[in-house]
Length: 306
Image (cartoon, rainbow, N blue to C red):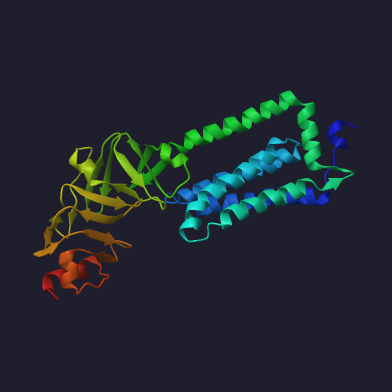
């Protein structure tokens, strides 16, 4: 009988490992099926689910590195969720949850079969095959480094343009990131063109919208010919958009639409069907209440002076 066949794990431990593999496989498929370009957190979820699957498979193959892969995923998830939980006043959930995950796994890995636990088998295997263990450690950490490098070059799609960014900030788990656009791009939007130059510094928020600051328009890295309701928008402005629609203009000076002065932000929700226009002139005009209009209705309100 070979050494590998002499190893045995408790039935519940085998059930736990396979349940984790199948459960995370389902999550991975589900996240891929529902994934869209705007969900960066969803992308991280896919990566973590795959890492957990790999970790459990390594344990099934008696590789101790699998345990540390699972623990590393638990720590990274805790780091990602901590800012949100602390912001909403649930900060204690992070350390408590992390301690529970590690404790539960440690307890299960120490369940004995024939007087010896899976953890002891894993340690013995690592000692007996030190060279192979070092190779597996190198493989795992090499893969992690590769994933971090890939994470620093996110690929986004806006108005049919495939845009690659250099964004080291994305490696650090947080809500959104900033980075430099690689290459020149022309986005043909519903209000005109936005021309983004090579190495323009842009921001991506947590839901995947791209934001371009007015400074980029001022220094010539980005330009536009945007027209809103027949009025050319200021040359220097902040603009934010998702993969197929502009969602916000932030005007740096007054503009006049149908003779009505507008200052501040113009926000769009589900454009062009439902538009909320916010600005000092318009807000005063509509008694400082937020109204939703489609474009023809908005034009009618502005021209009627109601």
